Length: 91
Image (tube, rainbow, N blue to C red; front, side, top):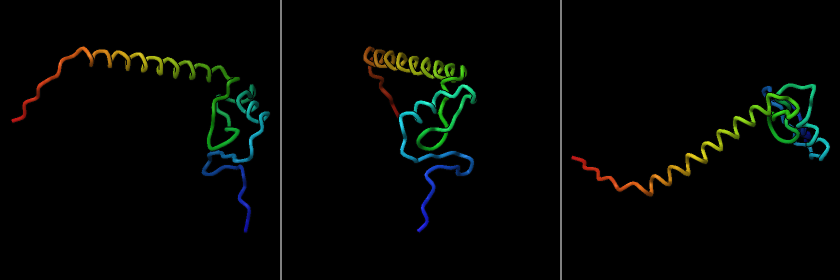
């Protein structure tokens, strides 16, 4: 039986299922000569290149959106506790 390759591309999407090493994991996320997205050190697809300034903007926007969602979720639970039940009449 033929052995399947542990890394390569399928339909233009990279994959890598080789046993990860610490050096490969750390170097995959910091590649100054590459663009914003780089191949994942383990798994399928791409990840952010932390050596690129655009990646930090993406992380900041995602963090701000997550923070905003958490705060609005807290406010929704407070307003539900204060509101009275609503009666719905269906003919």
